[in-house]
Image (cartoon, rainbow, N blue to C red):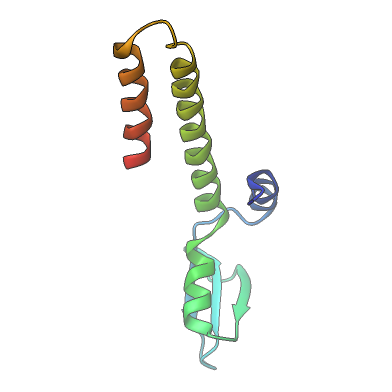
Length: 108
């Protein structure tokens, strides 16, 4: 299982981003803070363009936003699950509402 807490700590410690990538005069791919070419963050050598693009796209700001989305969905699913647990004696309407809430989250 992925430890999103560990990923969050690493993302918060890194240069925030957004990042961008580019190719230098020696045809080596690099990534920097967007709009700050003097802030070289790293270089990609193997599969250079694809790796640099991926690294720039998966910058800490993006990762932190993804973690936030995961946690929000987890909260909604927990609430829906709790509602389902409470429906044992409450009838179908409450169960269907909880199921619809879970389905809505999973479809977005």
